[in-house]
Image (cartoon, rainbow, N blue to C red):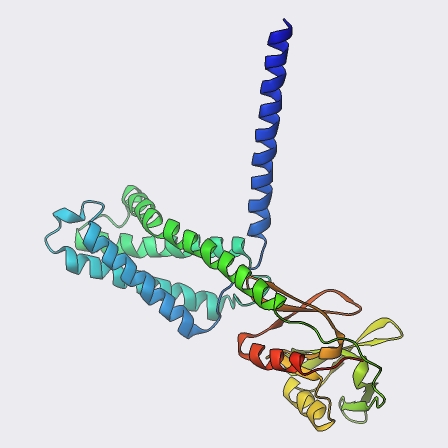
Length: 317
């Protein structure tokens, strides 16, 4: 009896350990789904990816001849035809998402989950193109749900798994690379307070001027034809919207000798004196600020070299 009870207890503990491990893995997976995914927004980068994927599909079909293609009369032309359909349908999907739905893939809100959903819909749209091509070439029934389901499964099998696997690898590599880069950046040590604290005046329409000390400024964010100025006064964060462009604001800082106010992104200016931490995720370097909780400002790839140089030569009050 005692031996049986001990065996049952051992099995229960083993199951509990396995359940805990599985729960931890599931939790990690869902956490990763909500992490940012690195994706370039430019149309040129998207075209390159589409060409590579289409060439991969055409090459895979020609060399491996799956789904009965080895019995086709001309497998080369057939492989190229499916590759061309993949390119045209992926291009149309990208243009629709980019210019009609206006989806931005270069923002922190673009997560791994959204990317996976995007890939699933993209591959399904390409599957529809393959379905139409197959029906036209082999005189199939365009209204056949069975044929559509068969082509959809084959396209998902061929397209989804390689793309998803490569996406996970891309995300992990981007996170590791950006973390290493963030760790290599050392913020300057604090020194004595600046003796000269200049003020700066911003015009905000007719007969409306906003004035503040430059050292009160945390960051400036572009909002189309406006900018939002974030300052900290007496320990409290204040925000002011100005009718100016970020380029004109930056010129005012430069002409005022505020070299410690730097452009780190096309939409952001930051005060190097107020940066509390440089971190990194899959989408690049992120900046945190003294007194500004929960706000992460991105550093664009094109500004990283300038940002590092400015940090290396800066002193902080």
